[in-house]
Length: 207
Image 1 (cartoon, rainbow, N blue to C red):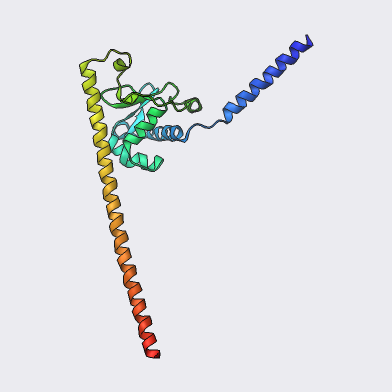
Image 2: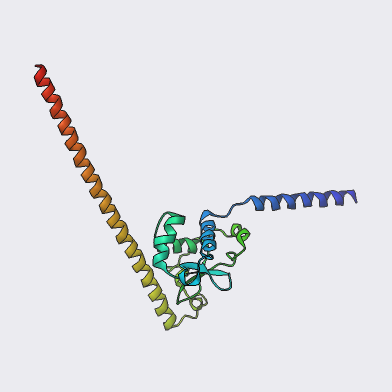
């Protein structure tokens, strides 16, 4: 009897340790920031929402990808690339569940369940040519039809156009920075030249 009691107590202590270890585990920063931006968005009026939880609270919708890229992403992720955000979602196993809007879902990512974020981990890269967020449910089950393929192509085209727009914007910003650097370089060279001329004049006077 004593041996059994000792085994049970030891098992209980191990389970307590495992519970404490899981409670100390922190969720990935990407998931935590995504959850926080959704919680912040829930305080905004419906007609002004850029991103929000869906009605069931088991997924979220990006209502305006352009405004989301321009206003939300830079605040939370220090970039404005919507396609990069979606690729991150894909690496954590999120699925695009609607062909008519940018709605994403993960069984462990739910409104009011912040504690479940620690249970989400990165998945291994799939060998498929197209990422899972561009596939409809029927494609995943092997029952794709022509209409669903066309819808996915439209989504893919929209995503590429959005990324192209962001790249053009980044290019313009870089060109402006280069122009500013060149102007600064010319001013520095001019100041250096003036200093050298003054020094030469002083030397001549001393001679």
